[in-house]
Image 1 (cartoon, rainbow, N blue to C red):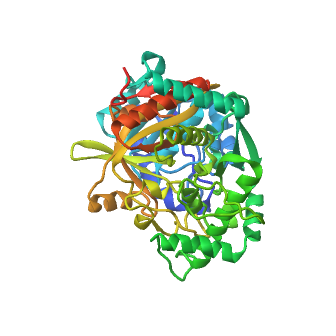
Image 2 (image 1 turned 90 degrees about the vertical axis):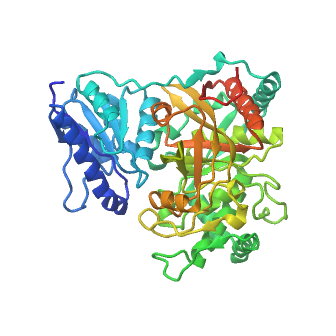
Image 3 (image 1 turned 60 degrees about the vertical axis):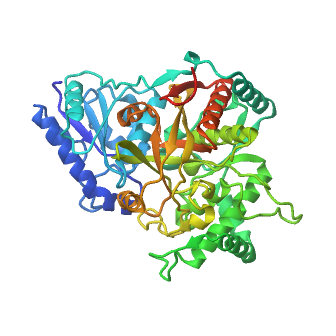
Length: 533
Protein backbone atom coordinates (compact mmCIF):
# COMPACT_ATOMS: atom_id res chain seq x y z
CA UNK A 1 0.00 0.00 0.00
CA UNK A 2 1.97 2.98 -1.31
CA UNK A 3 -0.45 5.76 -0.42
CA UNK A 4 -0.55 7.47 2.97
CA UNK A 5 -3.37 6.16 5.12
CA UNK A 6 -5.98 8.81 5.97
CA UNK A 7 -7.63 8.64 9.40
CA UNK A 8 -11.10 10.09 9.88
CA UNK A 9 -13.33 10.45 12.94
CA UNK A 10 -17.10 10.81 12.65
CA UNK A 11 -18.61 12.43 15.72
CA UNK A 12 -21.87 13.65 17.16
CA UNK A 13 -23.90 16.61 15.98
CA UNK A 14 -24.09 17.87 19.56
CA UNK A 15 -21.15 20.04 20.61
CA UNK A 16 -21.30 19.00 24.26
CA UNK A 17 -20.97 15.32 23.31
CA UNK A 18 -18.03 15.95 20.98
CA UNK A 19 -16.19 17.99 23.60
CA UNK A 20 -16.79 15.49 26.40
CA UNK A 21 -15.83 12.45 24.33
CA UNK A 22 -12.84 13.91 22.51
CA UNK A 23 -10.17 12.73 24.96
CA UNK A 24 -11.20 9.07 24.61
CA UNK A 25 -11.27 9.45 20.82
CA UNK A 26 -7.81 11.05 20.82
CA UNK A 27 -6.33 8.20 22.85
CA UNK A 28 -7.80 5.58 20.50
CA UNK A 29 -6.57 7.42 17.42
CA UNK A 30 -3.04 7.70 18.79
CA UNK A 31 -2.88 3.95 19.40
CA UNK A 32 -4.19 3.12 15.92
CA UNK A 33 -1.74 5.52 14.27
CA UNK A 34 1.14 4.08 16.29
CA UNK A 35 0.18 0.56 15.18
CA UNK A 36 0.10 1.61 11.52
CA UNK A 37 3.49 3.33 11.77
CA UNK A 38 5.05 0.40 13.61
CA UNK A 39 4.06 -1.76 10.65
CA UNK A 40 6.01 0.56 8.37
CA UNK A 41 3.23 2.67 6.86
CA UNK A 42 2.44 6.38 6.86
CA UNK A 43 -0.78 7.72 8.36
CA UNK A 44 -2.21 11.18 8.93
CA UNK A 45 -5.52 12.68 10.04
CA UNK A 46 -7.75 13.85 7.24
CA UNK A 47 -9.08 16.80 9.26
CA UNK A 48 -7.59 18.98 11.97
CA UNK A 49 -8.49 19.52 15.60
CA UNK A 50 -10.79 22.55 15.86
CA UNK A 51 -9.37 24.98 18.44
CA UNK A 52 -12.64 26.88 18.69
CA UNK A 53 -14.92 23.86 19.09
CA UNK A 54 -12.38 21.98 21.24
CA UNK A 55 -12.65 18.66 19.41
CA UNK A 56 -11.40 16.95 16.26
CA UNK A 57 -14.55 15.24 14.98
CA UNK A 58 -16.39 15.54 11.71
CA UNK A 59 -19.54 17.02 13.20
CA UNK A 60 -21.83 17.46 10.20
CA UNK A 61 -22.55 16.04 6.77
CA UNK A 62 -21.38 19.35 5.33
CA UNK A 63 -18.01 19.05 7.09
CA UNK A 64 -17.60 15.45 6.00
CA UNK A 65 -18.18 16.31 2.36
CA UNK A 66 -15.68 19.17 2.56
CA UNK A 67 -13.01 16.86 3.94
CA UNK A 68 -13.61 14.07 1.42
CA UNK A 69 -13.14 16.54 -1.43
CA UNK A 70 -9.54 16.93 -0.27
CA UNK A 71 -8.77 13.21 0.16
CA UNK A 72 -7.09 11.40 -2.77
CA UNK A 73 -9.85 9.19 -4.23
CA UNK A 74 -7.82 5.96 -3.98
CA UNK A 75 -6.20 6.61 -0.58
CA UNK A 76 -6.71 3.96 2.10
CA UNK A 77 -9.09 5.32 4.75
CA UNK A 78 -9.48 4.26 8.38
CA UNK A 79 -12.54 5.44 10.31
CA UNK A 80 -11.66 5.23 14.01
CA UNK A 81 -14.52 5.33 16.50
CA UNK A 82 -14.35 5.58 20.27
CA UNK A 83 -17.74 7.34 20.45
CA UNK A 84 -21.31 7.22 19.27
CA UNK A 85 -21.22 8.83 15.83
CA UNK A 86 -23.60 10.19 13.22
CA UNK A 87 -22.97 8.01 10.17
CA UNK A 88 -24.13 10.55 7.61
CA UNK A 89 -21.12 12.72 8.45
CA UNK A 90 -18.93 10.25 6.52
CA UNK A 91 -21.32 8.07 4.51
CA UNK A 92 -21.59 10.34 1.45
CA UNK A 93 -17.83 10.40 1.01
CA UNK A 94 -17.45 6.68 1.64
CA UNK A 95 -20.08 5.72 -0.94
CA UNK A 96 -17.93 7.10 -3.77
CA UNK A 97 -14.46 6.54 -2.31
CA UNK A 98 -12.36 4.25 -4.50
CA UNK A 99 -9.71 3.26 -1.96
CA UNK A 100 -9.90 0.55 0.72
CA UNK A 101 -11.99 1.37 3.80
CA UNK A 102 -11.38 0.08 7.34
CA UNK A 103 -13.70 0.76 10.29
CA UNK A 104 -12.13 0.43 13.74
CA UNK A 105 -13.57 0.68 17.26
CA UNK A 106 -12.05 0.59 20.70
CA UNK A 107 -13.36 -2.26 22.87
CA UNK A 108 -14.99 -0.01 25.43
CA UNK A 109 -18.50 0.68 26.59
CA UNK A 110 -17.71 4.21 27.68
CA UNK A 111 -19.22 6.46 24.98
CA UNK A 112 -19.29 3.99 22.98
CA UNK A 113 -17.30 3.39 19.80
CA UNK A 114 -18.56 -0.16 19.35
CA UNK A 115 -22.13 1.05 18.89
CA UNK A 116 -21.01 3.81 16.53
CA UNK A 117 -18.91 1.44 14.43
CA UNK A 118 -21.66 -1.19 14.13
CA UNK A 119 -24.03 1.52 12.97
CA UNK A 120 -21.53 2.64 10.35
CA UNK A 121 -20.95 -0.98 9.29
CA UNK A 122 -24.68 -1.55 8.90
CA UNK A 123 -25.02 1.61 6.85
CA UNK A 124 -22.12 0.67 4.57
CA UNK A 125 -23.62 -2.79 4.13
CA UNK A 126 -26.98 -1.32 3.17
CA UNK A 127 -25.27 1.05 0.73
CA UNK A 128 -23.33 -1.79 -0.88
CA UNK A 129 -19.96 -0.22 -0.02
CA UNK A 130 -17.13 -2.75 0.52
CA UNK A 131 -15.21 -2.34 3.77
CA UNK A 132 -13.17 -4.19 6.36
CA UNK A 133 -13.67 -3.90 10.11
CA UNK A 134 -11.65 -4.41 13.32
CA UNK A 135 -11.96 -3.85 17.06
CA UNK A 136 -9.50 -3.96 19.92
CA UNK A 137 -8.98 -3.15 23.58
CA UNK A 138 -5.50 -1.63 23.34
CA UNK A 139 -4.73 -2.04 19.61
CA UNK A 140 -1.69 -4.17 20.39
CA UNK A 141 -3.13 -7.71 20.30
CA UNK A 142 -2.37 -10.30 17.65
CA UNK A 143 -5.92 -10.33 16.28
CA UNK A 144 -5.82 -6.60 15.61
CA UNK A 145 -2.23 -6.28 14.41
CA UNK A 146 -2.21 -9.28 12.08
CA UNK A 147 -5.46 -8.22 10.42
CA UNK A 148 -4.35 -4.59 10.24
CA UNK A 149 -1.18 -5.68 8.46
CA UNK A 150 -3.21 -7.69 5.94
CA UNK A 151 -5.37 -4.67 5.22
CA UNK A 152 -2.33 -2.39 4.87
CA UNK A 153 -0.95 -4.84 2.30
CA UNK A 154 -4.11 -4.44 0.26
CA UNK A 155 -6.04 -7.50 1.43
CA UNK A 156 -9.67 -7.44 2.55
CA UNK A 157 -10.14 -8.62 6.12
CA UNK A 158 -12.39 -11.68 6.18
CA UNK A 159 -13.66 -12.79 9.58
CA UNK A 160 -14.86 -16.29 10.44
CA UNK A 161 -18.68 -16.37 10.51
CA UNK A 162 -19.50 -20.06 10.28
CA UNK A 163 -21.89 -19.59 13.22
CA UNK A 164 -24.45 -18.13 10.77
CA UNK A 165 -26.22 -20.56 8.45
CA UNK A 166 -29.06 -19.97 5.97
CA UNK A 167 -32.50 -20.98 7.19
CA UNK A 168 -32.73 -23.35 4.24
CA UNK A 169 -30.09 -25.54 5.89
CA UNK A 170 -32.58 -26.42 8.64
CA UNK A 171 -35.92 -28.20 8.87
CA UNK A 172 -38.47 -26.19 10.79
CA UNK A 173 -41.00 -27.92 13.06
CA UNK A 174 -44.25 -28.19 11.16
CA UNK A 175 -46.40 -26.39 13.75
CA UNK A 176 -43.98 -23.48 14.07
CA UNK A 177 -43.63 -23.18 10.30
CA UNK A 178 -47.41 -23.18 9.86
CA UNK A 179 -47.83 -20.51 12.53
CA UNK A 180 -45.19 -18.19 11.12
CA UNK A 181 -46.46 -18.62 7.57
CA UNK A 182 -50.04 -17.92 8.60
CA UNK A 183 -49.09 -14.76 10.48
CA UNK A 184 -47.04 -13.47 7.55
CA UNK A 185 -49.90 -14.07 5.11
CA UNK A 186 -52.33 -12.37 7.47
CA UNK A 187 -50.02 -9.35 7.73
CA UNK A 188 -49.70 -9.12 3.95
CA UNK A 189 -53.47 -9.41 3.44
CA UNK A 190 -54.66 -7.09 6.20
CA UNK A 191 -51.60 -4.84 6.35
CA UNK A 192 -50.27 -2.74 9.21
CA UNK A 193 -49.13 0.84 9.72
CA UNK A 194 -45.73 1.79 11.10
CA UNK A 195 -45.81 5.30 12.58
CA UNK A 196 -42.58 7.22 11.97
CA UNK A 197 -42.12 10.39 14.00
CA UNK A 198 -39.55 11.93 11.63
CA UNK A 199 -37.31 9.55 9.71
CA UNK A 200 -33.55 9.13 9.83
CA UNK A 201 -32.51 9.69 13.43
CA UNK A 202 -28.83 10.56 13.96
CA UNK A 203 -27.85 9.70 10.42
CA UNK A 204 -28.78 6.05 10.89
CA UNK A 205 -29.08 5.14 7.22
CA UNK A 206 -29.08 1.48 8.24
CA UNK A 207 -32.28 2.05 10.24
CA UNK A 208 -34.39 3.12 7.25
CA UNK A 209 -36.18 0.41 5.25
CA UNK A 210 -36.90 1.50 1.66
CA UNK A 211 -40.66 1.67 1.11
CA UNK A 212 -40.59 -0.75 -1.81
CA UNK A 213 -39.02 -3.43 0.41
CA UNK A 214 -41.30 -2.75 3.36
CA UNK A 215 -44.49 -2.80 1.28
CA UNK A 216 -43.79 -6.39 0.22
CA UNK A 217 -44.31 -7.42 3.85
CA UNK A 218 -47.68 -5.71 4.21
CA UNK A 219 -46.32 -2.87 6.38
CA UNK A 220 -46.70 0.74 5.29
CA UNK A 221 -45.21 3.86 6.84
CA UNK A 222 -47.28 6.70 8.25
CA UNK A 223 -44.81 9.58 8.26
CA UNK A 224 -45.66 11.65 11.30
CA UNK A 225 -44.10 14.81 12.64
CA UNK A 226 -42.55 15.32 16.04
CA UNK A 227 -44.01 18.83 15.96
CA UNK A 228 -47.46 17.19 15.98
CA UNK A 229 -46.39 15.11 18.97
CA UNK A 230 -45.22 18.26 20.75
CA UNK A 231 -48.51 20.01 19.96
CA UNK A 232 -50.48 17.06 21.33
CA UNK A 233 -48.34 17.13 24.47
CA UNK A 234 -49.19 20.80 25.00
CA UNK A 235 -52.88 19.98 24.57
CA UNK A 236 -52.76 17.19 27.21
CA UNK A 237 -54.22 18.34 30.55
CA UNK A 238 -52.03 18.30 33.64
CA UNK A 239 -54.39 15.98 35.48
CA UNK A 240 -53.93 13.26 32.84
CA UNK A 241 -50.15 13.46 33.22
CA UNK A 242 -50.49 13.31 37.00
CA UNK A 243 -52.69 10.22 36.69
CA UNK A 244 -49.97 8.45 34.69
CA UNK A 245 -47.37 9.36 37.32
CA UNK A 246 -49.68 8.25 40.15
CA UNK A 247 -50.20 4.88 38.42
CA UNK A 248 -46.44 4.36 38.24
CA UNK A 249 -46.01 5.41 41.87
CA UNK A 250 -48.66 2.89 42.92
CA UNK A 251 -46.72 0.17 41.08
CA UNK A 252 -43.68 0.93 43.22
CA UNK A 253 -41.53 2.52 40.53
CA UNK A 254 -38.88 4.87 41.94
CA UNK A 255 -38.16 8.32 40.52
CA UNK A 256 -34.75 9.71 41.51
CA UNK A 257 -35.52 13.42 41.64
CA UNK A 258 -33.94 16.69 42.64
CA UNK A 259 -34.48 20.44 42.50
CA UNK A 260 -32.00 21.57 39.85
CA UNK A 261 -33.39 20.94 36.33
CA UNK A 262 -29.90 21.35 34.84
CA UNK A 263 -28.62 18.26 36.61
CA UNK A 264 -31.58 16.57 38.31
CA UNK A 265 -34.74 14.81 37.26
CA UNK A 266 -37.56 17.12 38.33
CA UNK A 267 -41.28 16.63 38.78
CA UNK A 268 -41.96 18.96 35.85
CA UNK A 269 -39.75 16.87 33.57
CA UNK A 270 -41.55 13.69 34.60
CA UNK A 271 -44.98 15.20 33.97
CA UNK A 272 -43.94 16.34 30.49
CA UNK A 273 -42.80 12.79 29.78
CA UNK A 274 -46.19 11.55 30.99
CA UNK A 275 -47.85 13.99 28.58
CA UNK A 276 -45.73 12.59 25.76
CA UNK A 277 -46.89 9.09 26.68
CA UNK A 278 -50.54 10.15 26.44
CA UNK A 279 -49.92 12.08 23.23
CA UNK A 280 -48.09 9.21 21.54
CA UNK A 281 -50.91 6.76 22.24
CA UNK A 282 -53.56 9.15 20.96
CA UNK A 283 -51.72 9.97 17.75
CA UNK A 284 -50.95 6.28 17.16
CA UNK A 285 -54.64 5.47 17.62
CA UNK A 286 -55.73 8.32 15.33
CA UNK A 287 -53.58 6.96 12.52
CA UNK A 288 -54.15 3.26 13.23
CA UNK A 289 -50.51 2.51 13.97
CA UNK A 290 -49.51 -1.01 14.98
CA UNK A 291 -46.03 0.18 15.98
CA UNK A 292 -44.39 3.59 16.33
CA UNK A 293 -40.95 5.13 16.59
CA UNK A 294 -40.03 8.52 18.07
CA UNK A 295 -36.80 10.12 16.90
CA UNK A 296 -36.33 12.58 19.82
CA UNK A 297 -32.56 13.08 19.47
CA UNK A 298 -33.15 15.82 16.90
CA UNK A 299 -35.85 18.43 17.18
CA UNK A 300 -37.66 17.29 20.30
CA UNK A 301 -34.44 17.40 22.34
CA UNK A 302 -34.59 21.20 22.08
CA UNK A 303 -38.20 21.32 23.26
CA UNK A 304 -38.91 18.47 25.62
CA UNK A 305 -37.53 16.11 28.22
CA UNK A 306 -36.40 12.73 26.90
CA UNK A 307 -38.75 10.20 25.29
CA UNK A 308 -37.20 7.18 26.99
CA UNK A 309 -39.64 6.68 29.85
CA UNK A 310 -42.43 6.81 27.27
CA UNK A 311 -40.79 4.23 25.02
CA UNK A 312 -40.40 1.64 27.76
CA UNK A 313 -43.97 2.08 28.96
CA UNK A 314 -45.37 1.65 25.44
CA UNK A 315 -43.55 -1.66 25.06
CA UNK A 316 -45.22 -3.07 28.20
CA UNK A 317 -48.63 -4.74 28.21
CA UNK A 318 -49.28 -3.60 31.78
CA UNK A 319 -49.01 0.18 31.62
CA UNK A 320 -50.91 3.33 32.61
CA UNK A 321 -54.32 3.44 30.85
CA UNK A 322 -54.97 6.26 28.39
CA UNK A 323 -58.39 6.98 26.91
CA UNK A 324 -59.40 8.40 23.56
CA UNK A 325 -60.48 12.00 23.50
CA UNK A 326 -64.11 12.33 24.47
CA UNK A 327 -65.42 8.76 24.54
CA UNK A 328 -63.47 7.03 27.33
CA UNK A 329 -62.25 4.17 25.16
CA UNK A 330 -58.99 2.76 26.55
CA UNK A 331 -56.35 2.87 23.85
CA UNK A 332 -54.60 -0.42 22.99
CA UNK A 333 -56.22 -1.93 26.07
CA UNK A 334 -54.43 -5.02 27.33
CA UNK A 335 -51.75 -4.67 24.67
CA UNK A 336 -48.33 -3.20 24.18
CA UNK A 337 -47.86 -0.61 21.48
CA UNK A 338 -44.46 -1.74 20.18
CA UNK A 339 -42.09 1.22 20.10
CA UNK A 340 -38.76 1.24 18.28
CA UNK A 341 -36.14 3.53 19.79
CA UNK A 342 -34.56 6.17 17.54
CA UNK A 343 -37.06 5.34 14.76
CA UNK A 344 -35.04 2.27 13.84
CA UNK A 345 -37.46 0.84 11.28
CA UNK A 346 -35.67 -2.51 11.12
CA UNK A 347 -36.31 -2.85 14.85
CA UNK A 348 -39.91 -1.71 14.33
CA UNK A 349 -40.61 -4.44 11.79
CA UNK A 350 -38.98 -6.96 14.12
CA UNK A 351 -40.91 -5.71 17.15
CA UNK A 352 -44.24 -6.00 15.36
CA UNK A 353 -43.54 -9.53 14.13
CA UNK A 354 -42.22 -10.62 17.52
CA UNK A 355 -45.28 -9.24 19.26
CA UNK A 356 -47.58 -11.21 16.95
CA UNK A 357 -45.68 -14.50 17.17
CA UNK A 358 -45.29 -14.33 20.95
CA UNK A 359 -48.95 -13.34 21.45
CA UNK A 360 -50.11 -16.24 19.29
CA UNK A 361 -47.94 -18.63 21.30
CA UNK A 362 -49.30 -17.28 24.59
CA UNK A 363 -45.96 -15.88 25.75
CA UNK A 364 -45.41 -12.43 27.22
CA UNK A 365 -45.03 -10.35 24.02
CA UNK A 366 -42.87 -7.57 25.47
CA UNK A 367 -39.76 -7.06 23.39
CA UNK A 368 -37.19 -4.34 22.90
CA UNK A 369 -34.10 -3.36 21.04
CA UNK A 370 -30.84 -2.78 22.90
CA UNK A 371 -27.52 -1.27 21.93
CA UNK A 372 -24.78 -3.86 21.48
CA UNK A 373 -22.82 -1.86 23.99
CA UNK A 374 -19.84 -3.91 25.17
CA UNK A 375 -18.92 -7.10 27.03
CA UNK A 376 -16.39 -9.03 29.12
CA UNK A 377 -15.90 -12.54 30.39
CA UNK A 378 -17.37 -13.43 33.77
CA UNK A 379 -16.74 -16.82 35.40
CA UNK A 380 -15.70 -18.34 32.09
CA UNK A 381 -18.61 -17.03 30.00
CA UNK A 382 -18.60 -14.08 27.66
CA UNK A 383 -21.35 -11.82 28.99
CA UNK A 384 -22.55 -9.01 26.76
CA UNK A 385 -23.67 -5.69 28.18
CA UNK A 386 -26.84 -4.72 26.31
CA UNK A 387 -28.22 -1.27 27.11
CA UNK A 388 -30.65 1.14 25.51
CA UNK A 389 -31.58 4.68 26.39
CA UNK A 390 -35.26 3.86 25.99
CA UNK A 391 -37.72 1.11 24.98
CA UNK A 392 -36.93 -1.58 27.61
CA UNK A 393 -40.24 -2.70 29.18
CA UNK A 394 -40.57 -3.28 32.96
CA UNK A 395 -41.78 -6.83 32.26
CA UNK A 396 -38.15 -7.61 31.38
CA UNK A 397 -36.82 -6.42 34.77
CA UNK A 398 -36.19 -8.25 37.98
CA UNK A 399 -39.11 -7.08 40.14
CA UNK A 400 -41.01 -5.47 37.26
CA UNK A 401 -42.10 -1.92 38.01
CA UNK A 402 -41.07 -2.32 41.66
CA UNK A 403 -37.55 -3.11 40.45
CA UNK A 404 -37.50 -0.16 38.06
CA UNK A 405 -36.30 3.39 38.54
CA UNK A 406 -36.18 6.56 36.48
CA UNK A 407 -32.98 8.61 36.60
CA UNK A 408 -32.14 11.85 34.88
CA UNK A 409 -30.61 11.42 31.46
CA UNK A 410 -27.10 12.86 31.12
CA UNK A 411 -26.99 16.53 30.20
CA UNK A 412 -24.37 15.85 27.53
CA UNK A 413 -27.03 14.28 25.30
CA UNK A 414 -30.27 15.37 27.03
CA UNK A 415 -30.12 19.06 27.86
CA UNK A 416 -33.72 19.30 29.05
CA UNK A 417 -33.52 16.20 31.21
CA UNK A 418 -36.21 13.62 31.55
CA UNK A 419 -35.87 10.20 33.08
CA UNK A 420 -34.95 6.76 31.80
CA UNK A 421 -36.75 3.50 32.59
CA UNK A 422 -33.96 1.64 34.34
CA UNK A 423 -33.85 -1.93 35.57
CA UNK A 424 -31.84 -5.15 35.52
CA UNK A 425 -33.12 -7.74 33.06
CA UNK A 426 -34.27 -10.93 34.72
CA UNK A 427 -32.50 -14.24 34.06
CA UNK A 428 -34.12 -16.40 31.41
CA UNK A 429 -34.12 -17.68 27.86
CA UNK A 430 -34.39 -15.20 25.00
CA UNK A 431 -34.52 -15.05 21.24
CA UNK A 432 -32.35 -12.34 19.68
CA UNK A 433 -32.58 -11.02 16.16
CA UNK A 434 -31.73 -8.23 13.76
CA UNK A 435 -33.45 -7.25 10.54
CA UNK A 436 -31.19 -5.34 8.15
CA UNK A 437 -30.91 -4.27 4.54
CA UNK A 438 -27.99 -5.62 2.54
CA UNK A 439 -27.56 -3.92 -0.85
CA UNK A 440 -31.26 -4.00 -1.69
CA UNK A 441 -32.18 -7.25 0.09
CA UNK A 442 -33.92 -7.53 3.46
CA UNK A 443 -32.21 -10.04 5.68
CA UNK A 444 -32.48 -11.15 9.29
CA UNK A 445 -30.09 -12.86 11.68
CA UNK A 446 -31.78 -14.81 14.49
CA UNK A 447 -30.30 -16.70 17.40
CA UNK A 448 -30.71 -17.83 20.98
CA UNK A 449 -29.20 -16.55 24.20
CA UNK A 450 -29.67 -16.62 27.92
CA UNK A 451 -29.87 -13.68 30.28
CA UNK A 452 -27.84 -14.23 33.42
CA UNK A 453 -28.03 -12.53 36.78
CA UNK A 454 -24.66 -11.20 37.93
CA UNK A 455 -23.80 -10.14 41.47
CA UNK A 456 -24.97 -6.59 42.18
CA UNK A 457 -21.38 -5.43 42.55
CA UNK A 458 -20.52 -6.67 39.05
CA UNK A 459 -23.66 -5.12 37.59
CA UNK A 460 -22.78 -1.79 39.18
CA UNK A 461 -19.22 -2.05 37.83
CA UNK A 462 -20.52 -2.64 34.31
CA UNK A 463 -22.98 0.22 34.64
CA UNK A 464 -20.18 2.50 35.79
CA UNK A 465 -18.20 1.68 32.64
CA UNK A 466 -21.18 2.43 30.39
CA UNK A 467 -24.30 4.50 31.25
CA UNK A 468 -25.61 3.88 34.78
CA UNK A 469 -28.97 5.58 34.09
CA UNK A 470 -29.98 3.04 31.44
CA UNK A 471 -31.55 -0.45 31.70
CA UNK A 472 -29.07 -3.31 31.43
CA UNK A 473 -29.22 -6.88 30.15
CA UNK A 474 -26.47 -9.42 30.82
CA UNK A 475 -26.65 -11.74 27.81
CA UNK A 476 -24.73 -14.87 26.82
CA UNK A 477 -25.15 -15.83 23.17
CA UNK A 478 -25.29 -19.55 22.47
CA UNK A 479 -22.61 -20.70 20.04
CA UNK A 480 -21.60 -17.20 18.93
CA UNK A 481 -18.28 -15.79 20.10
CA UNK A 482 -17.56 -12.13 20.64
CA UNK A 483 -15.61 -11.77 17.41
CA UNK A 484 -18.09 -13.81 15.36
CA UNK A 485 -20.89 -11.58 16.55
CA UNK A 486 -18.99 -8.38 15.79
CA UNK A 487 -18.04 -9.64 12.34
CA UNK A 488 -21.58 -10.58 11.33
CA UNK A 489 -23.89 -8.11 13.08
CA UNK A 490 -25.01 -5.33 10.76
CA UNK A 491 -26.44 -2.81 13.19
CA UNK A 492 -25.93 -0.98 16.44
CA UNK A 493 -29.14 -2.54 17.77
CA UNK A 494 -30.26 -6.05 18.67
CA UNK A 495 -33.86 -7.17 19.30
CA UNK A 496 -34.62 -9.40 22.30
CA UNK A 497 -37.68 -11.20 23.68
CA UNK A 498 -38.12 -13.69 26.54
CA UNK A 499 -39.77 -17.10 26.38
CA UNK A 500 -40.96 -19.22 29.32
CA UNK A 501 -38.34 -21.95 28.72
CA UNK A 502 -35.58 -22.98 26.34
CA UNK A 503 -37.98 -25.25 24.43
CA UNK A 504 -40.49 -22.41 24.16
CA UNK A 505 -37.77 -20.05 22.94
CA UNK A 506 -36.78 -22.55 20.25
CA UNK A 507 -40.38 -22.82 19.09
CA UNK A 508 -40.70 -19.03 18.97
CA UNK A 509 -37.46 -18.68 17.01
CA UNK A 510 -38.67 -21.22 14.45
CA UNK A 511 -42.05 -19.51 14.06
CA UNK A 512 -40.44 -16.09 13.76
CA UNK A 513 -37.96 -17.36 11.17
CA UNK A 514 -40.84 -18.86 9.18
CA UNK A 515 -42.74 -15.58 9.36
CA UNK A 516 -39.72 -13.63 8.16
CA UNK A 517 -39.16 -16.06 5.30
CA UNK A 518 -42.77 -15.81 4.15
CA UNK A 519 -42.41 -12.00 4.26
CA UNK A 520 -39.56 -12.23 1.74
CA UNK A 521 -36.77 -11.74 4.28
CA UNK A 522 -33.67 -13.92 3.88
CA UNK A 523 -32.93 -15.50 7.26
CA UNK A 524 -29.70 -16.71 8.87
CA UNK A 525 -29.88 -18.89 11.98
CA UNK A 526 -26.94 -18.11 14.23
CA UNK A 527 -25.16 -20.19 16.85
CA UNK A 528 -26.48 -23.20 18.73
CA UNK A 529 -29.21 -24.24 21.18
CA UNK A 530 -31.95 -23.20 18.74
CA UNK A 531 -33.42 -26.70 18.49
CA UNK A 532 -33.28 -26.84 14.68
CA UNK A 533 -31.83 -29.73 12.75
